[in-house]
Image (tube, rainbow, N blue to C red):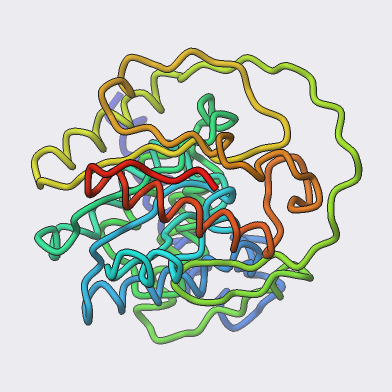
Amino acid sequence: MRQFLLRLTGQTLGFIGFILTMGLIAPMHPKMEAKLFTRGGGFGNTHQRIPEFKQKLQTEGIELLFLGSSTCYRGINPVSFEDKLGMTTFNLCSSSQALSNSSRMLGWLNSSASLTKAIVLDVYPALWNSSGVECARDIGTNHNTTFDWTIARIASSSGDPFTVLNALYFGSKALRGIDSQFSAPRNGDDYRGLGFTWSNHHAVEPVKCLPISVSLNPTQMSGLSSIRETCEEKGIKLLLVNPPQLCEEVFEKPEVMKGLPWIEGNGWPLAKVDTLYYDDHHLRGVGAELYSEWLSEQVEAVLTDAPATTH
């Protein structure tokens, strides 16, 4: 047994040594890096969004924060909210960001919780059964900043070894002052700042919608519960938004969501105008501008307890 444990320890240390060695060598060889780890990607503009968010958080503070998936970062322009509400605002949504991922991102607010007055959480129902791995891998790989504990928690909470390894690797590159090379953003995507991506794509072809029933899995239920608890502890107003979609999911509102302000994006008067979308749930830039104007009025109404307009 002792010899077995010694061999196992030796193999483990050898493997760790190999990984560390490859981590030191890979940045100098892009092809090796892509094969052993992965290549940083520009899709979704995470590599631009995260550094801008962290800088704004430190220099100005963020009073109104958006969390959620691509329906959010492609659909909500914070400029409309800064103009309407007079609050410093940022869109920290990212590709496939599930509730479990959003809950970990609140770690960035610890140093400025007194400035954060409200969080608008985009609860796109199609992600209610998500594992959260895709978003964790995106954030861990494409943060383009020095590695920190919030990124570590986002990566480790995925439970995916490859995601954790990538996060450690790209974080160590940043610590050593080595810039990552990111692939070009998706053609037609224009990052406008404050976390918002303008989507300059053609309008979607006619869509035939089929009913899809969804429910909140335990991982995402736990994530939302954590967000609620954090907001209650810090005195942050939490609002839920179901984003507009051409094809809606069928669901019963989970118990964990009850009692929270709910803004129904499909109640937006233009929610079913297909020329404003490039697929069945992502708004084009022109649609995002119109939706953001409407949504800013709904958020203002909730925050001020005033009736919202519906035009």
